[in-house]
Image 1 (cartoon, rainbow, N blue to C red):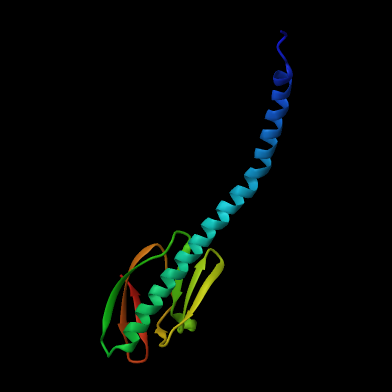
Image 2: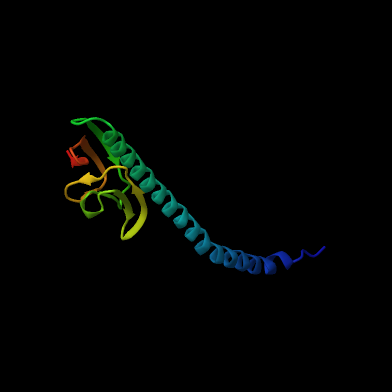
Length: 135
């Protein structure tokens, strides 16, 4: 009986087709993974901005001279901005892109403060609004 050589001849074609399919699938898979990571980072920024806004609204609803210290963790590459001309807003951004804007019940007084990374802040109730300071 003579052995068949069809497997030996067909193997390079099967390998070529397999590698071609893999080469075509890698870029869409990498793009999907990157989009998922971006979505997770956006959600972390949004969560940190909501945490900060809740703390500011809590202090604003209390009496004078009420203070709270909070540790805010902003994801790497993200930024939270409060105070300044937009005193009623907490802005969450990632790079140059604004991710979220949260409206506050009382304004944040003073200069605009940008928060990056893991930061400890002091939130106190002032006569006409809330004062946010980094420590």
